[in-house]
Amino acid sequence: MKKILLVSIIIFAAAFTACTSSNQADGQITVGILQMMEHPSLDLIRTSFIEEMHALGYTDIDFDHRNGIGADMSALTSIAQIFVGNEVDLILAIATPAAQAAAATTSDIPVIFAASTDPLAAGLVDNLARPSGNVTGTSDRICVESIFDFALQLTPDIQTVGFVYNLGEVNSVSVINDAKVLFAQLGLQYREATVTNTGEVHQAALSLVGHVDAIFTPIDNTVAAAMPTLAQVAMDAGIPVFTGADSKVMDGGLATVGIDYGILGAETARMVSRVLGGADIADVPVITMADFRTMVNRETAEAIGVSIAGLGSYVEIYP
Image: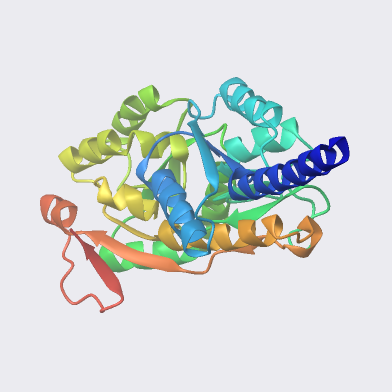
């Protein structure tokens, strides 16, 4: 009888273990999503990432989504430490500062960044083609030459452009440096108005009024969070604003040749799927997106007197 009871217990325990393992398999994958801050571009990356993960068959995956406070590294690091303490399976870091915080916090948990403009300059990877650590991801580096080709098509008389960006965001500095090199070739002048937080964007924009013919803001998360403010100051002064992201056009900028963040989010999900499936980070190269949207804000164009008649069908008119 004791022998039968013992066998029964063993069988029950095995069945329970199998059941537990199955349940763990359903819910064992947890992805910590560390988002630098809330603004339309970053939100779109997150939502498209989650949608694509579900489409790839990850229906029971757990997403622990937390927003930081802009480029406040202490806040971002604290969230990354929570993810490490919770032993998440992977960290998705949206925007460069979030990726830097996550990469500095763990060398064991895979960190996949989304929308890091210059991952080399940011110190996230040492090789785009074959990352050597636990970090890889998608880059949203834009082509400033394409942006200003389009800018000069819309507003051919501009001579001086104001740069509004956060000096603390490596992603922005990298693009601004590209713009400075391009301007030397084109014979354009520039004037800088840098910020450290969203509260400074209004004054930075005002400081350019009367001194510039146009404003350019790259893929800068700080400025993006206050883009409606910048757009309104520029609109009141009749100054066109050219941007590095489609969301900034939706928030009142005039035009961009920028990244489609919905596509970037989905591409990042496919990368995460590879890593969760066992791929070595070294075999998952950084992807620099090549899907650009050429977009013009119709209402802004009308408000500042810029004609958008005759633009090609490749140009998306918003709204």
